[in-house]
Image 1 (cartoon, one colour):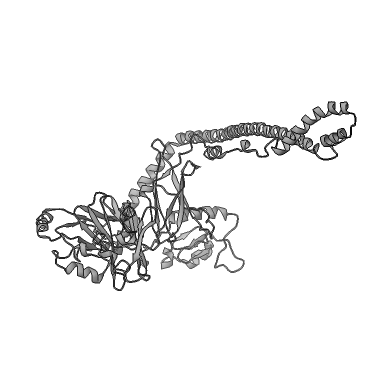
Image 2 (cartoon, one colour):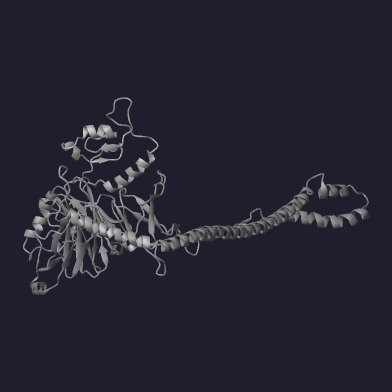
Length: 598
């Protein structure tokens, strides 16, 4: 779809002719001996000498009107054709798109509503603009030369300053190495002194104990004293010898090494120093960014947000790196890097389900990279994302439920209708939940979705339900349909105790007042503390249709809070029941119907 640049072709051809000046182009018509060509006919696509040109282009014939140029081998036709209509020549100029067009483009093509002008008018206008621009540049030739001189000075200064910066950096590192070497020498000297002193003490103790052996040292001397028959001499010697023998005996009984072999006091912890050295950077190096966990989302794709320090200078771009953490049987994968990111968020694709990934970010300014941000670990859901919106047609109560325009949020409105219904409490009737479901059902496979429950919600039931159970809920009279008799309502009726092990066509968990309530029969009898959990900021639900089980997760930590069997004999739908004030907001991934942030 690009036009040929005939102007550039002509310039190139002129230089080619100058280069071929030493190599003559011969006449294509002459009989031997062949003469050097003086003209080339663009219509005949041949080169001629003077005589052959006159013979083949006689006056008064159509050939006399042929276009001829100097000797050349380039006979491509100088005709600009429309790239959209290959058989049409361009004859107009589109002022909107700023390109030549043909008459078919103007009549019914992509330029039908654009303003066009004649080619001759466009030629004059553009040539005049180009001439003025060239004249301006020529008139500013002295200024351009001055600017070139300034740039050359800047190049020299850059090279000199770069070398100076390298020299100073090397000096700094040499001083650091000298300091480290000095400390190393001092600390090794301390270890050597302590080692020598301990070995000396232990060797002295060895010599002392060797003297206690028979026929050597103290024992040998004592044995010789016992052989003395002169009583006065024996008493004189034995008194001092007995003291030494007693000390040796006591030393044997209470054996204690003269020095400890461990060098625990010489253990060196350089963790902080190593971290400091890793973060060592120039004063112009950008500050490391910090990953914002509150805005990060990980599904089959990962949306990673980060923030910069308030006093940081603008950066050129950021690089996000991530790797999959291996299990006990697997090894950790190597780091993978994203393309340069020019904002403060990006999307990373093709993540594996039910896996942990580590993410880190670093900034770049003037080709200098910052240290890495602190690493964060996020866990992908156990199943692919299931996309849906709220269904406003099936059982939706417009009086008590308020649905957003995008159908991604629903709010329970405790209005006048609820107050009027409250009068029936005096007669024993119960005001039941208002249900709303997803607009897409599940009939096979494993699926995961996540949502947020407004923290100040009174009571909201979340989970799954089959189409048959939903039909029963939506068609029962509101005065007799009560969650008190709903076996999985979370209400302390006791009916759920008897049927907890039975696989039901629905499972709902109660959420409200900042708490999440685990169904009663799933915990020990009377253990109410383990049933009440803090309400997660984001709740995830995973339905394994084929296995007939449903799981509830803390979507931030991917910790499973509760699971149980569910009868998946029909089509299963995400189900939500609201009572009093409260709201549910689906995650952006869930409402997008496809995994895309862009």
